Image (tube, rainbow, N blue to C red; front, side, top):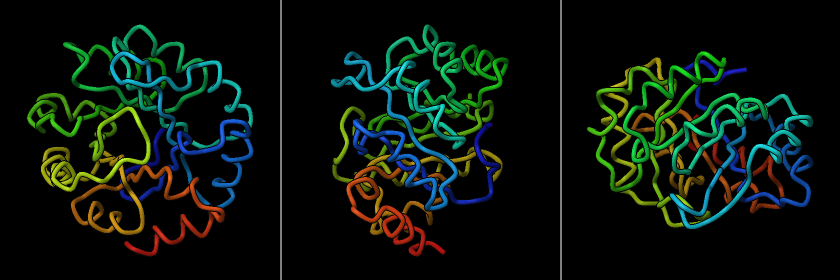
Length: 221
């Protein structure tokens, strides 16, 4: 399964904020609330100052759900690891423009493996960095916090880049936003052109996950 077709707004709960002792149960809970995808934050302790999950964990939770697995690789040298993540069961792999000199080669490899591809911009990275290659991707991810940790404050200036990204890619490529997304910030990023909203603490930090998801959805519907 690849990303949902562009044209719908999707919430992608980030498992970084979930209880890792019961990931299968946590994912089942948000799936029952109607989401189509979950966001998997992969950190290597090198590109970002934290370590999270890798292919073995993803392969384990893949057995528990048919949701789209949207893997965000916050790692150096993603080209070395994408095959392992695809084999583990991810459906989309997003990597950072800051870590590669040949993004198109990675996109081609992912597409040849049946995996969709995303490119990511850090808060400080200008949209111009992805402009020459954006059309080759299935999604562009705009970070509205600094990658590496959950629970950070939404950076409003970084969010404004969504407007230009949407102008560049048009309506047929997804524009994802990650960082500080909740019922207060969701309507802003949707108005800018984002259609894929990553939310961690705003969902998994709440006791009633369905109510948390519905609260975000009501802000833009």
